[in-house]
Length: 97
Image 1 (cartoon, helix red, strand yellow):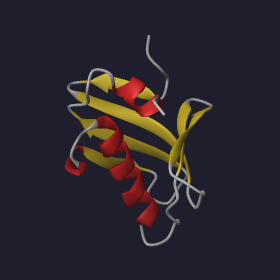
Image 2 (tube, one colour):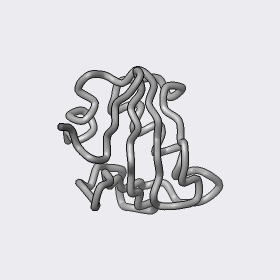
Image 3 (cartoon, one colour):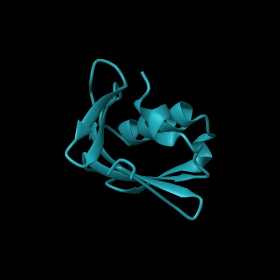
């Protein structure tokens, strides 16, 4: 069984995230309840944090930005992100330093 923050189905991955914008640097901060915690250097202004989040996930997974979409949590720290055609080792790639 995989991590609770990652669900795979029909060629897609759904990530449950807890996001902390305005951090010193962008990084994975571990597990927060049943979510993966991500610190973002971008401020929570004009969608900058959401854009930085999607770019960070795409880069970590080696995918184009267009493969990553914010499904819910536009203005919340709790977010759900959907990834098209994730790599088989998506969890390891996200957790790797």
